Length: 116
Length: 112
Image (cartoon, rainbow over all chains, first blue to last red; front, side, top):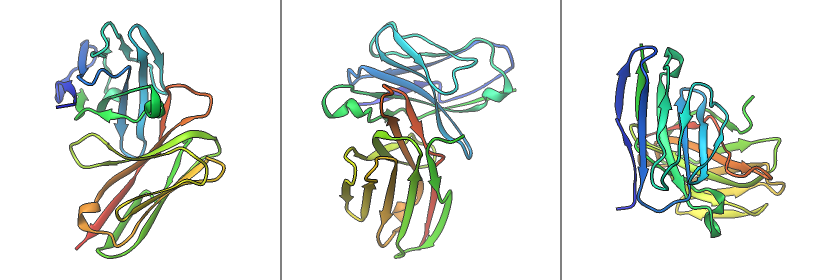
């Protein structure tokens, strides 16, 4: 089954404790991206990757890191989480060739993060 | 500043009514997409519009891309309770590769 998986689905942590949210896709997609979703703000892009070893900032990259060492994986790292990073996080992937050059996103199920 | 403004943000209607959701911008987009999201799940793509003036239909849903590629609309005919959800528009601005912009979303509730 074609899918994007994220782990963990739920996480409660404390300020300053480093954490990683994993994201994996099995569709051989070139493009992957991380978003956060907050009430009234819609989805905001954190980082995206056009392909292996190529990453770029989205609209809200501060406080986050990413890496793309393999095509299928795109982990999101919070080196020192703060309460304002409490949010619902989504990973997504897309092809970038042919019709899918329009970045039609396949989303994962989401990770709800609470930072106290 | 929201680059893609969606309106209305909330909509509560009775089953059988029609509705329109708007997605507006001052920027030109190479394409616009519409997604639907249900509670506890990730958004799911409904449609992509690419050409200015394009109209696409998906059963009772009609999507339109503005002639200038700065705006889009979603019209639902005879809404049903199963249409309830969060509708999101998203796009890539012309000349910007890979950076997706989302609207704030429209929460639709269709009451039986």
